[in-house]
Image (cartoon, rainbow, N blue to C red; front, top):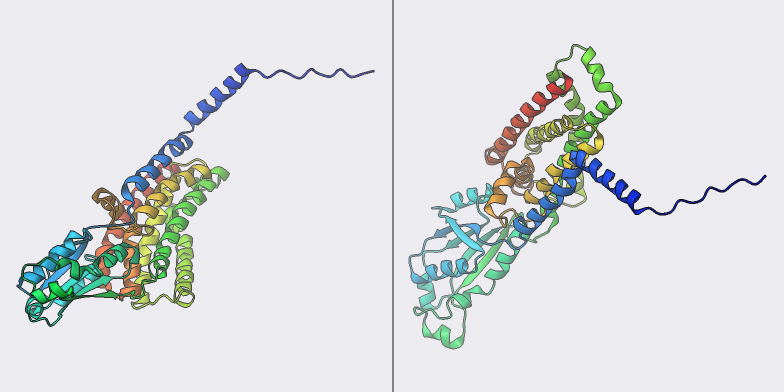
Length: 384
């Protein structure tokens, strides 16, 4: 007996449209996926289109001018006309200027000796000193290139210049460039220390949020309700293992940086470990805060992405921080990674102490307290 073959259904455009409408309805109801589809491209477009600038200008600079003659003023105006230098600080001594550079306030220090103009008039070829913060070679690279060969251009049409220089096309003075902390402009000196904070951020924001969300999915979080644990005890108990893992990552990355990449470590190792604690905790509590809004691990990873992309782009790790517009710098200063990058580079490359890193530690602690408050508040609601 032959089995009847069921005739194959014909393609129906109306059925297809019904299925498409159903998928759009599900996407609209899935707020996290819908926000990721719409919000993430907008964030990337705004950050890459408006905030990122690989050729930063008007970089903060310090000026020590011991000369009152006309040629020192022409040198200052000439450097500012390149649009790379913006003299915002006027310290009275080299010691004060060094403090500004160590604390990341300035990236250049121009020192003009007292007899600069007199020596030019006498034809003695004086020199001015331009000190450069080499911890971020990408940020200062264009400015250093613009300053080379600038002396002859600056004084080319100077009415006070002796005629011999104009006739013989000589350079009346020299601008000596001294790159500090990274004289060879090695990119790894900037990238590898910054990787420490980036790895910790990516690890703990995403892993902490996904780990706690996984307990929701498995139902193990409900078992906590049967215990006498307080929400604060639960949060502390969940963070301690991650804290130990974080310090293990710190040791591994630092050992690789020192012995494999030959990155100098001029500061205190104990100080770096101490200031790492609030940074790790800040990222952990951000992850815990995200987990309270997530019902699945996918949602937790999606929420973490909204925090990690600005941290990557606006912290000064991938692109020069000073090259960003003011609004982007304000937003970047809120992120803990921005300040932690300054701390790590300062301790490793500059050998700074507790007094210098304090200005970057307190914003991390403030962020930590806010993240802790939000995590505790919403985690208590989750348990309830």
